[in-house]
Each structure stands twice: as structure tokens, then as C-alpha cells.
Image (cartoon, one colour):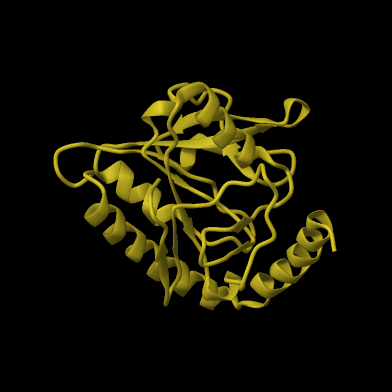
Length: 205
């Protein structure tokens, strides 16, 4: 079966599995995983030792893992949080600085996005960590996205135009881990995956 068909099949399965988790289970495990993520970032990176961070985060939607506590941790450190606004006609994301939930509004598709007044962030090279959304992940950093290609395009632009990319961290429920994610040449792998019970850190190039 072609990779595109395999991805489509796995998306349906992964969406159903994540949706089958109870609201309580998602909330409790989101909080647990975010605590693990904060400890991981403080231990692995230098944010807690005199330098604030710049965090690129998705804004959780529907059954996605709620990464709000990681954003709050970054704000408490005096860091910068940037979130995406999708530009569908150009197949791109613009990044905007937010200082709290009050800087978000519900967009056309029901997804919370930064207000039009939120400052645009153009310094991709200064992003330390990116919290990567996805439907499924594997132990080798494989990621199954939602099919839009926006995050793949962002990483590609970082590699081509900036020469560096942020540390790519995936926070996921155990139920989202699969034996292998089908990958195309343009797909990127994350640098680490954290769940409520497991952790994978991929070797850095």
C-alpha cells in the first residue's frame, strides 16, 4: 500500500483511539505529561539557568493533549510563547507572540488562533523548542500529522533559510504510540517523545 493510503488509514484509526479516551483521562494524563515535559526541558536545556526560552506551541484543539501548562511554565520564566495562525491559501503558518489565553480567539474552523493584533514573530532561529502536534508517533520520532503539511513546511524553511531548527518535542498519550508511522521524504522526525509512561530521546545529528 502506498504511503499516502497508509497515512490516511492510520489517521482514522488514531483519531478514533484518541477520541475514545475519557475527558477525565485526557485531562489527568495531559497534566502528568506536561509536568514530565517541564522537568525534561529544565534538565536538558539551559532555560532554568539564567536564560529564558522561546517556545513555539500549538494551541490544543478538541481531543489533543493540553499543553497549556508548558506554555504557562515558559511565561513564568519570563520566556516568549509563539503560536501559529494558518494561512490556508499560501499553505503557510505565521507565528505570533501571545502572553496568555486572552490573546487568542476562535478562528473559522473552531481552532483558537492568535488575535490579529498579536505581534508577528519572524526570528525562527531564536525558537528553542517546538511542541509538535500529531495524531500518532513512534519510538524513532516518526510523526503522523493531520495532512496539511504546515509543520513540515515550517521545518523545511528552517533548514533551508535559517540553517538550524528548534528542538522538536512531541507530547502524546500512550494510546497514540504506534509501532511505525509511515513516512515520506518530506516528513520530519521529532527529537523526543514523552507520554504518561514512556520516553524516547532521539540521537542528535
